[in-house]
Length: 323
Image 1 (cartoon, one colour):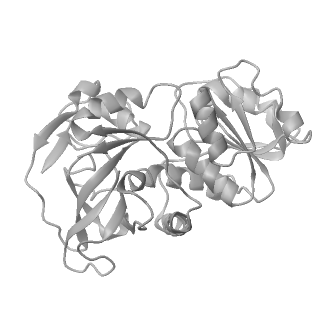
Image 2: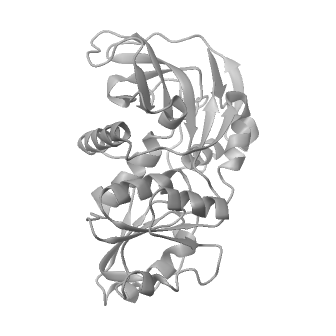
Image 3: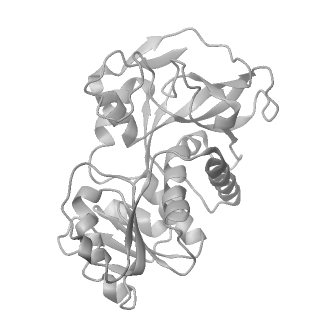
C-alpha cells in the first residue's frame, strides 16, 4: 500500500510517499480501501508540530476519507466487505492514517456512505460536518428562526454549517472574500452573503436582522474577528469559536448589556455526541439536504501542495487527495 509518512515535524516538504505493508484488521477493526482522502487545516498544524497534541513519529496524517470495506476483523457486526463507507478517524496507536491507499479503523469510526454521495464528497464529511454540527447545535444551541452568521462560509466547515443551518430553518448570513466563494455560499442557501475582505463588511448586519443583531456566530478566525463579532450580537447571542490563529484584545463589557457569550468548540466530541452527529449527517446525506462541496482534487503524492493550498485565503470547498 502507499501512504504519506511524516518522519519529522516541519514544513509541507516532510510529507513523503512510502510503500508500507497492507495491515490486517484485528478485533472489531475494519480495513478500508481508500478512494478519496479529505485534507483539513488541523492536519497542517499537526504536521508542523504546533498542535497541542502531537502523534509519535513517524506517522501518517489524516482522519477523513471514503472508500470500500476490504476486510473485517473478528467481532465486526455492522459492516461487510464491499460496503461503501466514510471514516472519521483511524485506529489509535497505529502508524496508518487516512493519507494512504488503505486504513485500519475501529468499527465505531466507520459510517455508511449513501449511494448518492461520491467518494470525493464522502472524504469531506467527517471533520467539516462534525465541527459545524457541534458548534451550531451542541455548543451554541441554535434554533429555527434565529439569525446565524457563518464566517468563512465558502470553506469546508463553512459550507457544512450553512447547509446544516438552512436545513434547520435558520436565517443564514455567510461571508467569503472572492466572487466565486460568495456565489458558492449563495448556492448553499444563505439569505445574505458579505465580502469579509472589506473593512466595513458587518455594517449592514443591523439592517439585515431587523435591528436585532445575530443570534449565533460561527467564528473561523477569532483572532481577527472576535472583537467585531461582539458589536453585532442580538440579546443572549452566542459566538462559537471554531478557528483561531493568534491572540486578540476584546472588551468583556461588550458581553454584558446583551448577556452574550463566547463558546469554545473543541475538535472532538464524546461517544454519545458523535453518535448524534453522524446519525444526523447520514440522514442529511441520504436526503440530499447535506452536500459536501469538493473544491480541488489532487493525487496523494501532492499532499505537500494540498497543505499549502488549504492555508490560503479565498477557500472554496474541500481539498481532496486521491490515492
